[in-house]
Length: 488
Image (cartoon, rainbow, N blue to C red; front, side):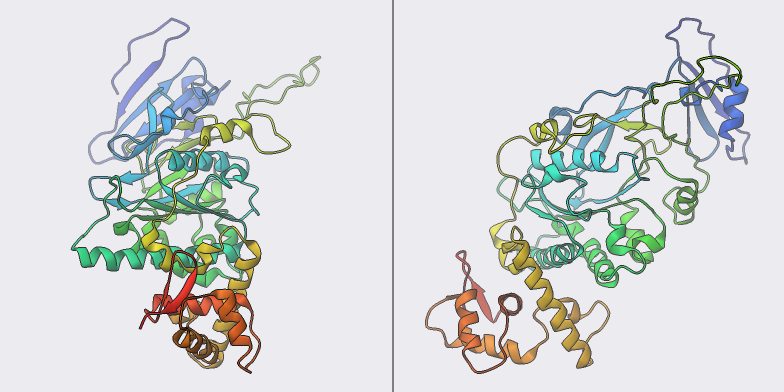
């Protein structure tokens, strides 16, 4: 160990550089270290970083350096030339950056955001969503707390969903867009996505409270896991990223898919305050490398002081400040360096939308999906602002999958995951109407004609799902005005 210089100023910071002998790895018990340093009154004054092998830095501050954090600004969230934004500060005051896009490889990013209840997960996500709007990224957000986590995002993103059913339709549309871009880029001889003015926009699909969609027993778990896994496979090279926010990190809470976890942990991984069980799972699942140790993040900045029970006035009437937003950027260059996200929005609870957050989003429309991919995104994208129409589309999807199951055609991750691929009789009826029409028709017109052909009466959502499938299969075309005609 190299002995530091002695500093006596109240504002001095002491830094110890330590190193183990060759062949040994750094191991330490944080509580024992705090006791040895004599800072039991406020353990949060100690910051420990290691390189996972023999070297470490122990920094002792005169006060907790992250107890106060400034508010985020729009300037913080403008991407630099490396595709990064500044989302907060490390304990030493240096900027903590997250990558939204990798210009060196043309790759869209994958995101994981973990934290227990009250750790600041929603506010951390707000920072990234605001940055996406400022940087012209198309944001598709499924807030599975019925929109309660990030309500200000509604209207400031291209697609805002509130239910697991709408999330499934969103993921299906994103996979279809990624596949359409793959075909288009392949025809042009392109091997990677390029974020350039006038080109296709970067797309980020975010699932907030993802455990509600992917946990054991969730009704759409298998389909949701398949779609996220497929998007992770196909989206990166065509500019479609995927991000999950969840309270737990265990494999079983994330779809039970080793492939899914392996893909996502290679992206931007942020860990806010955790439980002891969560940390064990992170190490087991490989999100925290073996040998790395992270200082615990307490629930508050309350110092631990023992006082006699006979002392008068020992109770403090004021609650200690919370540690919301404190985290580790596990995928960053300093995975064991404690950081804190910038403050975003009001500290006190509000009865409605937060005006500070709305001001950060700013006026103007968010970036939208390119016109070339509208057909691939399908009816769900067209109906994304209409909950009733989305519900009808999802009901049609379920009905078609049930019929496929009866016919023995359903396979895991196969054609049954796509709307409009079953219900052959209805598909033939819709196909006939489109083929016989002298001019393009709206979905409502097609519904009227189909229901007048003497067959079983159907709903608009089922017809829309079939039309989407016909467009994807090249049998029909859709104009910008929502009209359908034969591709022949």
